[in-house]
Image (cartoon, rainbow, N blue to C red; front, top):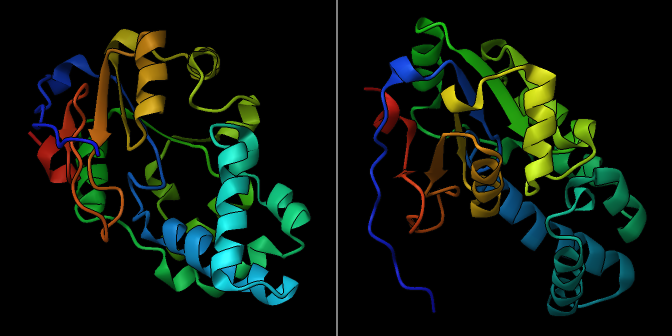
Length: 226
């Protein structure tokens, strides 16, 4: 069992930041939607289609998820539609009312805009997922650029992703801040040389707070408005 970590408080000056890179799922949006969808709703639909109990369907699906973790296939809705024989985008639409913006996100986005920082959404989400989520919780007007990992052809967990992103967007990695809820992503970004990385310690409103033992952590974005 993992031991809880003490919080490392973010310590930087906004005057040293030109570009802000923000993840979407678990960072700006409550990851409860994703957890519920993949761990409860899809097993229900898959079990009903294939004559499996919820327990059987869940075990089979979780094994399949693990096999493609940290690859582009994990977030590819077309991949899962083909693999499972289900229309995954349609199923996501059916429960899209569960898509929620985390507290203080809008206030933070306005705060960054007022400081004239370049603001980029950098998500592992498939383009069809992005469309569904932005229809329900439209954050697109706040961003200068929106990048899905599939555009670069590399998962965010790879340092090469961040090299290609820097090449695409032209940011100065020494004056860039990234906020993400996934430690592997933060490791990759830091390995590439992004100077300021922030861990989001409560990606789902239904889960406990888990601070990182390596990265500065926040629970909500009001902690970065200083």
